[in-house]
Amino acid sequence: METMTLKTPSYGEETNPWEAQAARFDLAAHKLNLDEGIMKVLRYPTREIIVHIPVMMDNGQLEVFTGFRVQHSIARGPAKGGVRYSPDVTLDEVRALASWMTWKCAVVNIPFGGAKGGVICDPHKMSMGELERMTRRYTAELVEFIGPEKDVPAPDVNTNEQVMAWMMDTYSMHMRQTVTAVVTGKPINIGGSRGRREATGRGIMIMCDEAVKKLGLARESSRVIVQGFGNVGSNAARLMADAGYQVIGIIEVEGGLYNAHGIDVDALWEYRQRNRSITGFKDAEAVDPAELMVTDCEILIPAATENQITSRNADRIKCRILAEGANGPTTAAADEILAEKKVFVIPDILCNAGGVTTSYFEWVQDRQGYFWKESVVIEQLEHIMKTAFEDVVRYAETHGVNNRIASYMLAIDRVAYTIRQRGIYA
Figure 1: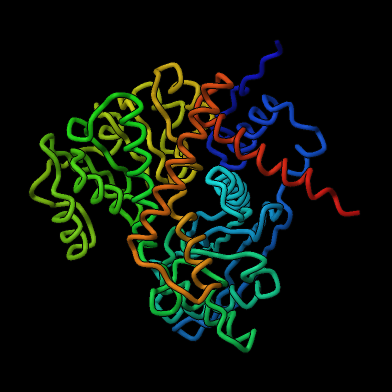
Figure 2: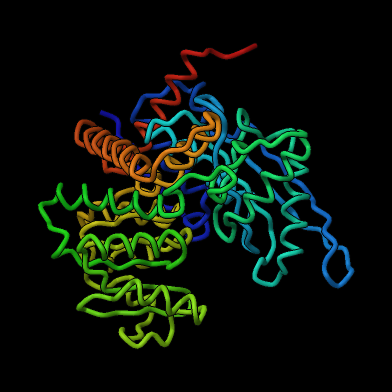
């Protein structure tokens, strides 16, 4: 039987997110014996939008920011994906994130396609007024391309409920009516969903629970290290600590914290809110972040940004379970090293899908005009996430592949099946 492996890339190629997702897509599509024409349809985005956004800054000067919105697929429903504000945003990154959203929505079997957006800016150096003006102009430039039936943005890196409220209001002003379902991740009082803020972190915990059971471990004896203490990482750490896991390490840009007996995550969160940093927290030892990434533990949760586990450090990773809270934290080259080490990887398009799943619930509630109790949101999230975990693990065992390729194969198969059913309009 013919086999196919990922080619060895240069380090620059390895850390290019578009190349990373393309390599995994090609491998999964090959293993599915996917029709070459369908492969071409799925390999590239449906639409890429670049906008240049003039913004009047507080000092009276006019600045122009570059923004992107990439819609990868709308085969299974409206495109869905976050908007990030960062000086590091690139079109290749947004392309990759949009495609990951397609596969993520398909893995958990919700009726969305994939999209992503971003603006090249440094939000930490901008006032609230400047951020609002930039957000509103970015939204206005995209008005004809987004909407509840077209493309539904959400928060991502350096964006939040307030940014979504501005986007929703701007779109609504253009439509001359309030359209709550145009974005998700909104404040609850204007159509947001209960449980949305904690959803990605809760989904990670649900996935860890399933992996722990699969490997015959226990929560109480499972040591956890979390990289990233933003919304995703902090909620995962808090929920897991409350559930009995031992959170022994927290990694942030400014440094790492370690306590072999467990960190009081709630106390650390309050400290971070007061001091805007985790450094100086008294109840844990300051540790080099790079060393903490390769410290012995049962569960490692990279919940920050892409390319944190690469061919340069994968051989030193000492976890039993790698639960990917971020998008693209592990490169394709690192996958092969982790497979040799028998690390149980819960891939990003499965592990962090709690956020988009609860965004789906928010979209449904907005369209119904009827809102659920938080207990219902959590119950529905657990059902979808556990079902998806079982589907991926079964696919991996049936096809003799790792969990990541299994998740890609499952997602690609679902999207390809829909395209074949719908046919190609000509």
